[in-house]
Length: 177
Image (tube, rainbow, N blue to C red):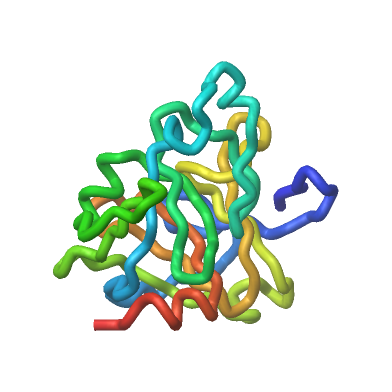
């Protein structure tokens, strides 16, 4: 179990895709189909002196801004950060707007593994924590938070790279193959 910064106690899914409770994630292949916006963090926050003390409020939890990250805005105005290399491995830059935001379209043939979380998987709990490579830091580990119906996505080339996508967002921005 995970106790969040607000004192909420949640079941955890490990970063290796295996749960700390008895559930089997049934991954299916999906492709992202909606474009995002992206901008280098140094173009968003020009004075980086205290950058790592600032928090980005993502859907999956708060996280410290990384000095070399790209800030991304999804189709539902959701925000997150990722490295430039990860961004460009999954997206092609197709335009730039007057404010310097890059329009990034999903590259064809870059699938993700996705599994929807059910109430049965959580043994009756509604929310869960996902141990991941990024997210809210608690005692040196990173966690994201989701609920029943949300999707856990996995990079097929890096099984430890897991993230949560809210149900409505997943269903409007991804398609199963």
